Image (cartoon, rainbow, N blue to C red):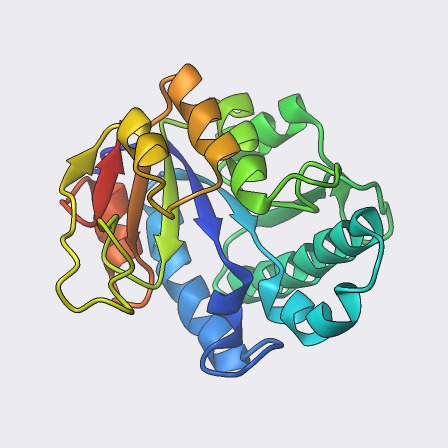
Amino acid sequence: MPRYDRVLLKLSGEVLSGGGPFGIDPEKVASLATELAEVVRTGVQLGMVVGGGNFFRGVAAAARNMDRVTADHMGMLATVINALALQDALEKQGIKTRVMTAIEMHQVAEPYIRRRAVRHLEKGRAVILAAGTSNPYFSTDTAAALRGLEINAQVIAKATRVDGVFDRDPLQHADAVRYESVSYQEVLNKQLQVMDTSAVALCRDNRLPVLVFNMHQRGNIFRMAMGEHVGTIIS
């Protein structure tokens, strides 16, 4: 039996690029969709926020000389590309999926309306929430925290490249120590690089737990949804 009825899953755009420097790896997206479909078939209501780093990294050098607001809007549009790719892969798995965007683009996706998003989830559809919050200066981490609260998710599951929250970067320090659980305040005080501070503070103020786990270990998404111990819980 699933532990959670409704989950907000935060995916980085880089996950969709596989091992490539940027863009979308169709095999990786198909593999990810297979895992996500397993979760939805158990009855878990799955909302997702996907980043755009796999595309934006390709134009990052040019964006350094751009106006920050323009660059942020480019990043938001990159998340829509990823959302559409993930929707296509999920529907090939037989999962009814809706993409909802914070920036209106009616020919491409539905505009984000909270009540409509919740209704889609209640009907068993996977919902991908794209274009961040539509506001510059806010990351997709903050968008995930905001959307998680709006749809009444029981947890934000943040998929990363490592096995949870560590006292320092485990990719650079072999002796880094992983936390089984950690408080929001400790994450903020120790500046643990898990999520943006604004996202952590938003979750803290509204008591929304965050589960950080390794995306690249196959089956972890399913284990997370079932309540098995994976990664680190921030609460």
